[in-house]
Length: 469
Image (tube, rainbow, N blue to C red; front, side, top):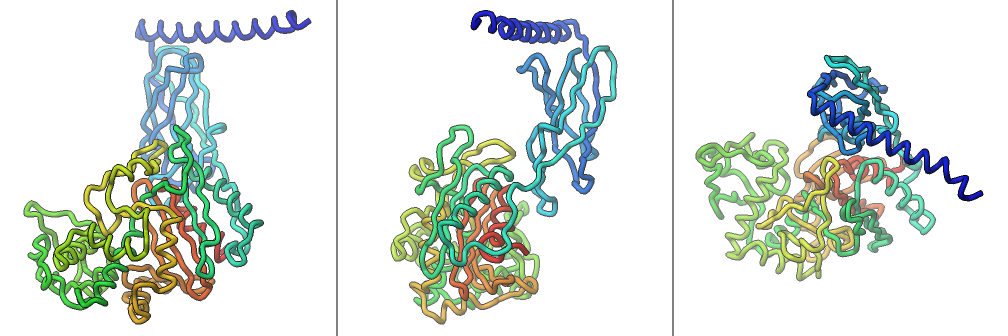
């Protein structure tokens, strides 16, 4: 009985293999004879509110799995290709749609439904049916109330489920989380993998790019130097060290450390130099807000010049040693290479960028567990006087009705009250550090895909603190 029941399966299997070989042979014969067909097609969204289109479609032979082409999609959703006579499946080349435009919502494409099958059985040019793209909805909704107040083991299950499901939705391979409450770390968790191909898990020592979260860390060091009388917050920086890159714009002589730390320098975020290596200010220093990493790099050079030490030594003496920070790194080393998580850019793993010189605007590499030590030092007002902390968290410039800047810190207000912290966005990484002083709670979260921005910056504060807004 067993022998006879397997015969239909064996026949079916060999018929499939025979068909596959026949299809491959047909493609090869068509290619050899030059028989080909020009196709043109168009993408459309079932949800008409979605803007723009994926940049490519993938064309796969139904009988030769090794025959895969890609075709570019233009701004109107049109694409074209030339194919050998045969049968094909056409589908978007990516599982999500987003083009680094924060005004465009992130869309997960349902690739199982977003496909068409075509057969090219005559030579010439054919117009194929529209490829109508379906989407997948968000897998886990935001709770009515934040989970962090009264956090307990039962809430960990809800939180972990929310994070892992949305990491999958937003295509985030790995993440690192720390929750803080009443001066303690109440939850630490590493999620996912360092690389989706190797499947190596995220560990306690895994390093993420922190991006602009580096800025409040450097500000903390600068304020220590202010307390020691080594630098004056309101003395023009050119009096310590001129900056030839912008010296042609005399207004730069107004720039102070306060302007740098509160983003009022007039510098662009990152300046494009002219043929002489110079650039101009965007506005008169101290008159308005203008986010600038360039300003932090100027202040870094001033600090190194004043102390006559390299920035590595300064950060070690003023930050790493006093706060016992072991896994804070500002440049790439052998240890960093060994423990760095890979980025994930447009569906492809990428190595963490190589940083030769510490950059006080963005180069910190760490994780949530280690950064929580720094966050609690700020919460406990270590190393600095109460007066200095008050100055750091005083609004220096208003951005909008709920957001302003202190010295190195973002200041904000939501339905649960005032908070401070910072976010960080690089090509492959998104991170957030936020603390609510009156509630005495906060969180730190690192991810290794920029598409995690919706989860990291937009959704996590609602899940943990405010609840659904």
